[in-house]
Length: 257
Length: 365
Image (cartoon, rainbow over all chains, first blue to last red; front, side):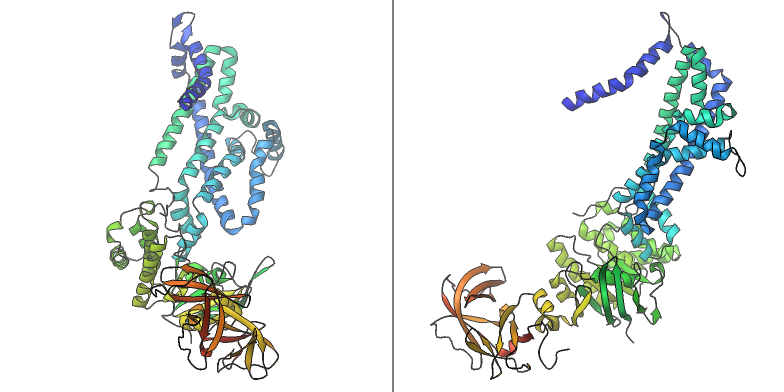
């Protein structure tokens, strides 16, 4: 009973600010209106920028998750001594402030041989790094939970080479961890502001940037966009979770009775 | 030439020597157990045969081929792990078919083979179930079927029964042996359970601290231990320590004990007569039971009596030392604590060991 009360209070706490914003966007004085939301439908910029953000998110998830799954598994099997180092590296993005990261990246990538400043690619790579703590942790937890070493060795004893083991045995059983990593990365990118501002700015404007711009001049519309952003991110997460249900087979651990 | 040869294997992990100069030959169709306590090197040996570890020195020869540096996936091995080795995302049938799919066998052939193996391990009905829907014993049977599906040259089992209930262990043990003999497949079996090793194997390899202590058929390893480690690790052993007297007997607490005929000893040296609890006969003092001529006789006091089911273990105090005597559980003789008893044994049933722990006799290696 207490649990239920606490849960309700918790959700109330989470939803209160959103409810407040909703209230703000749905009322003009005393009149209830959906005008601020409908405004988005005719707004070409809104559509373009939401696509930008989604594209970045998808690209980041694809690169980050596949890269980290591969790396985490490789280190787990071939070089377990490197794990502490990898853990340390994966935590760096937490430690380094986003502004510092942005300025550092600009320093390096504004000169030959690799001039990437102002491109979406640079932002994607930056996001991959930013997502490291989430993707590595989620995947590594998954690896430990499924006794990946025994599974991998079993597959090996049956004649499977490295890639085959990875694709047919490890990835399917890591699926929950991979989905977690994907979800975390996706939400991270959808809401990221600082790096987008510094690295790319208006060259490839993302949704959070647009939101920030709009909000200064038209608070009601800006607030409506914020709610839309929340709904879109939430909706996409549900879709990703839905995809995870249809993933290869049962992934519960074996139970020896 | 032996089917599997391990030639002078050395392996160190960090500063610890896991294996020192381990050599072994296994004939085709044999089931050989590697038996010993944790850390003795038995699993390391198996993993080197499998290819998951490479020895620092020495070679592994399988079916005429030097496979020391060949990766596991190309050695033609079949391996059964201790547990949790079935792929959770595949059914029992899919698990068994895995190796066949990797080897690109035609689908029809694979299907037939999976069916054969499911029948072999008695799990036809469980074909479509996932590992988490199977009991521990069933999982290990699937694991065995999976390892056999690809017709490996050698079957490697790493304590496959350790994680199972006692009853399941017993029935599965017999089944593994049955299948192994029926298929005539060479097998290497790692276990720390002596009963398992003794009941399953054609030969037992007793290991300790990275070395082989003794190799031989179960009866030999049990009945004729060659080193103190083997004697104390396998079953229980009584040790009667004393000094060799001038007449070629062992002086033990004022009694002269006859040595086994094979024993060679020098007067004055310390040695021990080592003997199994079931080799001693116990009679109450004064009961008048006949003692065969030439038997060694000791007198003592009964201290404890423990009923173990098939046997009753009696502990007798003899001149400050404690000896174990096993009598059949069905024998209904009443034994009372504090009772004065006579112990006798045939000198041939004992083994003479030097103070350093090696057997002293003509056949000592």
